[in-house]
Length: 255
Image (tube, rainbow, N blue to C red; front, side):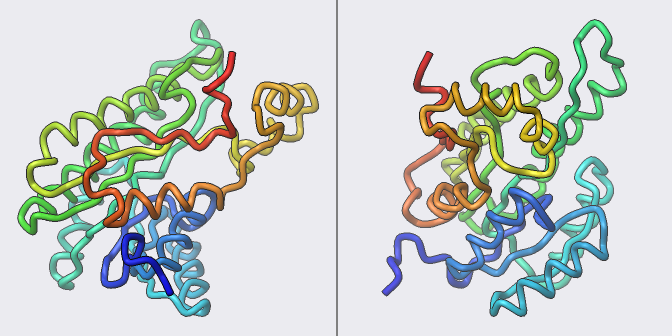
């Protein structure tokens, strides 16, 4: 028998960047816990395929394709959900990109692109979701941070700043919206096996560094974020607010 503390039956979850990667894994976990999932991405065909796969597995899912960096598209998407009578109970701000280059060689446009995708989008989408959640007195917002929400690493300055910003954006959301029945928290993944990290995984030196630096001695798997995501989306976290849970194999716990 499922535990009602972690039961998401009757809830609707919008997960940005959920047609693949970490977002897809978390969306699958929320769906298995009973939530209807709104699959998001910029490629309508990929999003539609993901929805078909969710439904084939017996889950409730719909497509919501929009570019998270376009405020107009975000606002339009929420207005379309309103018109369809769909209320977003759970928002997972997962969409993100990486860009590696030494700061002295970094173009301002690349800096801005990473911040717009990783941080500003979480603010804009969070704002639109919260407007509706406040009116209903209920909502769960889960922002996806990183190890770099706590520590920096060379050559990824815009990513580091964006994910550090996610941590404080999460706290700002909690400060403003907790009294309205909204819990805003974050997940900080460690080094995970994803398409975005494939070049690092294939680099013997970097692979050895990750395994040597991580107490678990391995890379994380996308599905290992599901537990934290379901917890933060469920009644089990109703008095948890403004926190970030690091799912990192213990990396931040050691020198």
